[in-house]
Length: 198
Image (tube, rainbow, N blue to C red; front, side, top):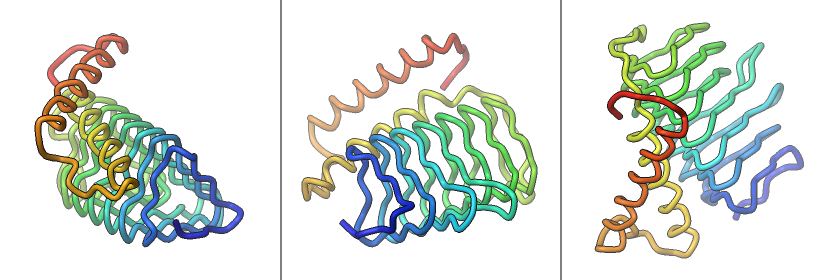
């Protein structure tokens, strides 16, 4: 694993690909994963990645001029996303090549569609789907189950990559895991007292 500076805090259960570049005050939580060619810089404030969240290939994370960048638990920040001084709640999926700008707040259980641009200071309510340039709320729906399952898939994949297994998403063991992950996510939805489709 790549050596990082003294401001970097990586939980022992997290996975960070050797090609990732982390600078400044960056904290990677338990079970989180950081994939190839991710860049994170926090020259001021901090970047914090929550438990079991995944930061996928080629994501860029930077702090804002006046704001940290905070990502909650069980989030998937997908390929080529830019996060800049924003806050992402729990159980969120930020779609491929989306941008979330300074001071924006994405609530829990949300989806930001691919290629969307979430403008500075936008507040997205819990259980929203946003899309467009600039992004707007296009639907209200609790996305906890689907988003949690996706995060659990990446958590499992990170454990496999750490062992040198790059084909963990196939076969009967994987199918059994998918069923277990969905059951766990459904239970989390009930515990939160939420209702509605995933």
